[in-house]
Length: 74
Image (cartoon, rainbow, N blue to C red; front, side, top):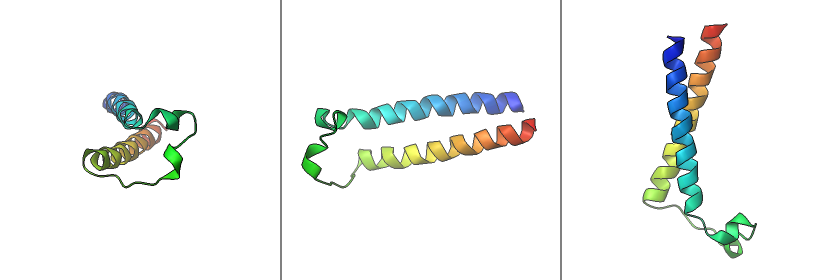
């Protein structure tokens, strides 16, 4: 069972990395150096919002699987 949890954890980690990179790709170059586009706040819509919510879900799943792995090893 622990082996399956490790495999799921690796898959979730890779998915989380890809999702964060996809979100960073959508920002402009000024945000990389600290110039966040003149301080204009905008709302997330469409695919960007879905990607944001999916990233939160994947990170929570990753955390829970990590906790389960630690508890079952104990």
